[in-house]
Amino acid sequence: MKVCLIAGARPNFMKIGPVMAGLRDHAVEPVLVHTGQHYDDAMSAVFFDELRLPRPAHDLGVGPGSPVSQLAAIMLALEPVLLAGRFDVVVVVGDVTSTLAGALVAARCGIDVAHVEAGLRSFDDTMPEELNRVVVDRVSRVLYAPSTDAVANLADEGIGGRRVVMVGNVMVDTLLDNLERARARGVAASLGFEPGGYVLATLHRPSNVDQPARLAGLLRALGEIAVRRPVVFPLHPRTRRRLEASGISVPPGVHLAEPLGYLDFLGLQADSALVITDSGGVQEETTVLGVPCLTVRPNTERPITVSEGTNELVGTDPDRVIRRALARIDERRGAKRPPLWDGKAGRRIADDLVTRYG
Ligand code: UDP
Picture (cartoon, rainbow, N blue to C red):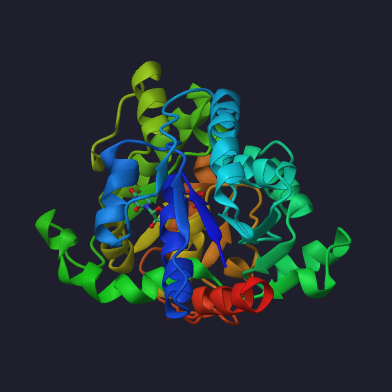
């Protein structure tokens, strides 16, 4: 059985490890392709080191560029790899440009596509990731859904039967495997914070950071929240670029940082009083950690983190963000586990792949 696994951006790397580990239990070594969509140490190499991922068999090295130029470059570089590889199945994860490129090229090369994290929908067509999700699911032969809402979304689009398997959440596999190591690093203490003594923030969605007025409003909100508790704000490269270009000043109490490695970021999440984010993965991680989370977006493709977890959609109005942050800081609801978010999703995926293609 020949499996190709494609990854390329930060939120992919924590999703591939559990699939690789599950396949290895069946003595299958997938051929890992890194597209190079994220290419620097802080957004890529650190995850390979910390999560002990093998070196990719193919590094397409596409590097920086606009989303469409990256999409095109990945597709052109990937086609010969997939044609030469004689793969039974190409596995793609998540909803980034690399996911879309991998699925389209595999489908056009006549190779089955399996999508990990299938069926999530924000129903917000202005989000680039929503287009990726819809198209990838449409061309996938096998759809691994993380939650029952995802299965229902696929059914609404006429995708069901044997193609769809609810397997749980691979991000949670990686979280549970690494939580102890993450806590042992004591990153909060090394920054001078007590457990619960700070708020953690991440923002990188184009809708929040690309317009200076929106970004300035959210920075003001973080500044108000920092009066109550200091805010640690590791900057996604996109956010740093926008912040520097706009000249917006950073309020006192808001501590900017470089993007963190997986273990340090997980350790900081686990001990924070509150997380403020627009990330997809962080909504899930805070739910499993039992840490209150405010999502600065009008919608989410992960509604289960609201209905069964600690997440709250607060929208993008800075005053509302401030109000809800001050109301929820320190709230502890205990760790939540939606069905099958149990650390075994990677194993279920591997078992299913072997049943189909082994
Ligand atoms: N993350 C990280 N360092 C950071 C910020 C986030 O390791 O400085 C991790 C986070 O724990 C989660 C993943 O990156 O596992 C989420 O990726 P991101 O927010 O970039 O993408 P999204 O989930 O929104 O697609």
